[in-house]
Image 1 (tube, helix red, strand yellow):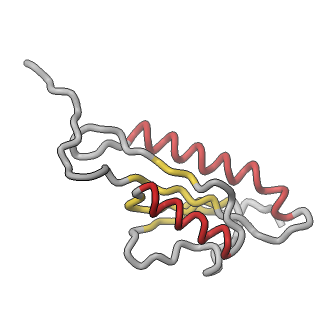
Image 2 (image 1 turned 180 degrees about the horizontal axis):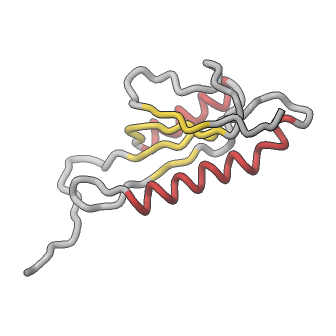
Length: 123
């Protein structure tokens, strides 16, 4: 039996998953102590999704990660701009700490979203 390789038959680009690493934005030790852990979460979930999810046509799903952690409005806006440019069709916010304020969350009403987070700050 001949199996055809995956081919994109859609007009335009395949939608991507946007990964949003959010963080407690307080400087002076709090944010700095969580930067590496937060970006590791984003990279790990992006690798997991890309390795395990496929589009309907068999092509792997591509993930786009924000350029930096998101601890405030300016970083959230920069992330949203990047996601628009990259063709993100769904967003996943990841965080190892409590930081679910509206200044860090994805507020685009047209983009499906999910949050993977827990409070690992041990306070």
